[in-house]
Image (cartoon, rainbow, N blue to C red; front, side, top):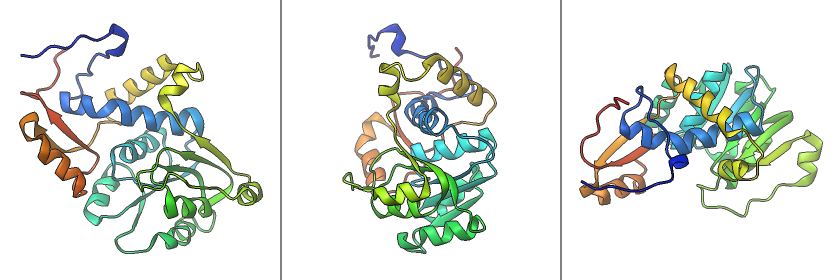
Length: 243
């Protein structure tokens, strides 16, 4: 057996609704989605939402969260029909499959799906051309959450006149730093997320699990873009928590 010593405030009791693998996959993705959509974008059930990178861990958590909040229009962007089927099962009301259309068509597709209105909230962990097209997909006064740069372009720029004309609010989202700076209520965040888990609304989607002896295969699955949601490396038995 192996043991590790951690500060008590770094530990969270595992919900009985989650396996250890799901518990390992939950924290970062769920908190990122919550910070971006609830604490920064102030998401409401009436909002139309566009989620880029929806088949990844933070994207899929965002889809689950929008469904939990009650949003009736949740448009998910991905690049695999099979993966997007899983996203629809988690709550997306429509998908844009980039294996069948170019990123340059995203705005046109979104306008079609929203009856020409555009979206009220954008959640983007991708960047690059996808980010540009997400901006063009917005309704007036939309909120745009910048989550990361999974597409490899971390030098994205925003045309100030475009943000001005459309009245956009654009946020940089750092869930951990927001707590350290005293910007958010961490206890409220944990309480609400725990409630969503207990109700079965935010259960991490773990498509791949590998024992630590097969960690190389885990990285290969990620590299080949086979993973939907999360890939978890386990240490021995992965049974449901009895705590």
